[in-house]
Length: 210
Image 1 (cartoon, one colour):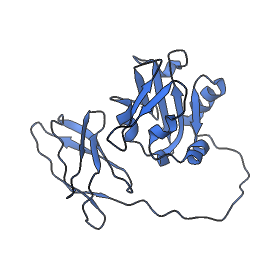
Image 2 (cartoon, helix red, strand yellow):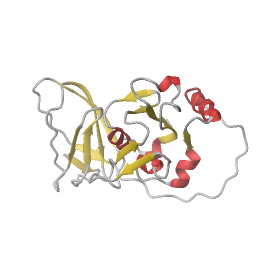
Image 3 (spheres, one colour):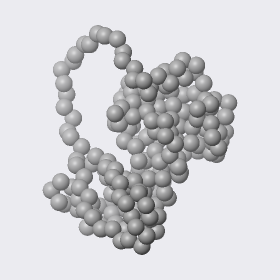
Image 4 (cartoon, one colour):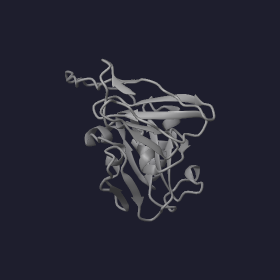
């Protein structure tokens, strides 16, 4: 069951199993049901309009039925701060060094935090709109859109260097744009750096802020 911090049920929340093609939507009473979830340690995600996304892990035994209550917090109201000018050197985290090196080579498309804030995306796939050779198709799910690269059908999605398995659009739907520091898009094998070559011929690489 999915509720807000006051215990009020949240309808139309999307609950999914990360890395698995399993997804459910809550009803008017906040209830949902996920069937045929493989046993073991599983990562779950829940998202709802106007609420902060939540991810958690659960260890399932074969044949086990799990029940629980999931509480989501609403997004805070925006606060306008006075203008502030800061002068200093840019700090680059070690894990982000590769992003700046690859951007200097210019093989793919690169979106940094400043560009993300300027575009103010609702979902991650909004950042792909307008890119040559990329198509985003809306679905009945407001969070998960279909992503198609015209030069490649096999798109790998990486988050902080780790490969996510499953449908690219569904994987991107699990990520909150507010948590993203930078994004790399490689639309074909000719652009793809060696570190992202596997069975894929294209890649979407995401670096989080935390």
